[in-house]
Image 1 (cartoon, rainbow, N blue to C red):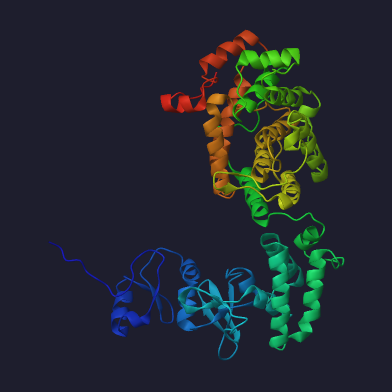
Image 2: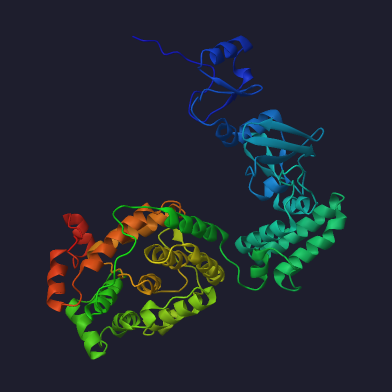
Length: 504
C-alpha cells in the first residue's frame, strides 16, 4: 500500500504560505524539485499553475496580515472595499512610509494605525482593520497626487462625491446624517478640522440645499436632483451591452426578415404575452375579446390586459417606435405601460412603482432609483448593434429594473419587439409552452450579472426563429402549426411530459 506523503504547507489551488512552515533547506529543495515556487521573499505557493499576480491578490489579507500585523486598510482602498486598484493597496501601519512590491500588487504604506472608540475601525480578516465609513470620508478629503503614472492614494473629489452618494442611496437619510456627524467629530478629534467645511459642503450638495459644484460627481448630481440610479445594475448593463455586442451563436442569425403584415401575429403576441404572466384565457375567449372589443363581465381587468396589449402590438406606428434619446424612450415606455394596464387603475398605469418588488428572493431596483437606472440603461442602448441584440438589451433592462407595480414583463416584451420592428426584423412571440425556458434565460442573465448572455441569446434566438417561420397570414395554417409545434401546451405540464417547442 502506497504511503501518503504529507507536506508542511498547503497544496490546494490558489493558496500561499510563508517561510515559517519549514526550514530554509526544506523549502529550497522543494523549489528546486518543482514542488513549490517562490513568489516573493518569504512567500511561496504549491500552486504551480495559477498566475502569480492572481495568487497574491486573492490572498492579500493573509499576506498583509503577515507583513504588517494590525494594519488598517485606508484611503482609496477603504473606499473601494479593499480592492486592488491599478495594482495598489493602501494601508496605514506603525513605522515609516514605504512600498512593498509583490507580484500583482504594491502595498503602499503610510504611518498610522487603528483608531479607538468612539471612532473604532472595522474588523477585517487576518487581524487587519478596515477604515470606518467616517474615517474613509475624512481620509479621502486629503489631497494626493499620483506620481509617475501611479494612481493617487486618495479619491478625487468627483470620486468621493459619488462614493458618498452611493452610501446615501443604500443607507437612507437617517444613517447618512449620522455619517455626517461622525465624520465631523472625527475630523475635529484627529487634527483635521480644516476639512470640516468641505465635509459640510459635500452633505449640503447631497441634500440639494446648495447646487453641486461644476464638475461634481455624476451620481451625486443625480441623487441631489432626485434622479439617482442603482450603480450595481448600471455596471451589469455595461457588461450586458458588451456581451451582447460581442457574443456569437451560429444558431442565431443576425437578422430574420419580418413576414407580411397579418392580424394573426399581433393577436397571438398579445395572447401569449398575457398567458405567460398568468392571465389565462382560451384562444377562443381571447379572440372574442379582440373581435368584439368587449370585456368579459366576470374578468374585466384580465380582459383589458388582453385588449391593451393587443392595441400596443397591433398599432402599425407604435409597435415599431423606438428612440435614441433616453428621455423619449422613458416617455414611450410609460405610454406603452399606460395602454397595457389601463384596465387596472390600482396598479398605476404609466406610473413608476411606489413600493419595492421582487421575485422569490431576487430584489429588483428600489423605487427611488428606478427611473434613474432606466435612464442610464437606455443611454447604453446605442452601444449595442440594432436589431436582435439591442432588442435583448432593452428587454433585460426593463425586466431587471421592474419599474412598474405590475405589467413589467409585458411591457418589456413590447419594447423588445419595437426594436426588432424598427429594424424591419421579425418580432418574437414567447408561446406558453416556452415560458419556463424564457424565464430561465432571463434569470440566468440576472444571476450572472450580465456576464453570461449565452442562455438568453440561445433561448430568445430559438423563439425568434419559431416566430419568423410561423404562417401568421393564414389563420388555418397558424392553427395547424400551433398544434404541430406544441406551442399551446401549458409550460409545467409540458416540462413534466417532456414536451417542447418545435420549429415549424
